Image: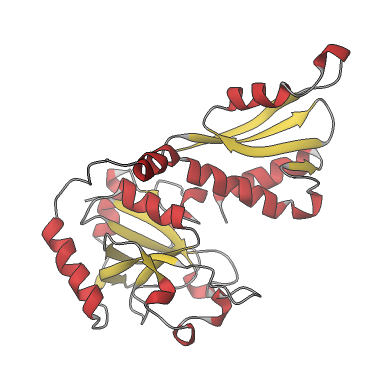
Length: 283
């Protein structure tokens, strides 16, 4: 059994919406691709204003999750969901999810940094990050907890039985092009920041090969006349393209006022460095 940490605004275990939800299908797909039946999610309160002060930075709960990809609004009406989770156009911000088939609410709910030696990165904010330290896993499994069974739901109950029947098992055999595309998204990738010469113009993006991406970009610059070229200043490796893209988007969000065209940003090196570090942490 493996544990995967994810940051949340509220505790999904113990409520009326027994789902672990995600803002993109890619993050949901990544969880299912790297996990097996019987693995568990550990929910940790974010340090943002959206999370109640008493829950911020704390280990809230743990859940065993089902293997099916769900769309939140197929199972719950808008009236059942928090209105703050809808954007200005009325779109739900977390439309994808996996069912919680059983869970455990920790009591007390300790601060994550008081329990774990592993420091979570931005992987755990839009998606999940595996806990790899055996001592950390043992500490979480030893926390006092109250067992939680989701409210009766015919479809979720069926998934719980399927989940139990599948433990332990192996994943499906890859056999089609959609799997190949998804597997490609699971390969190690980098978020990068390139600088145009010594100017304040930066290009932020993600790629599996930063050197290859740099060479491709510079092909379109007439270096024969002595014009400046792009050069790599920062790069951060992630286990998959989904997370690399998420960090890229977080940098864009933090420097939104500085964006010019496409992937380009006009800012100081200090401004970029500050946003870069914040994006890595993911808070």
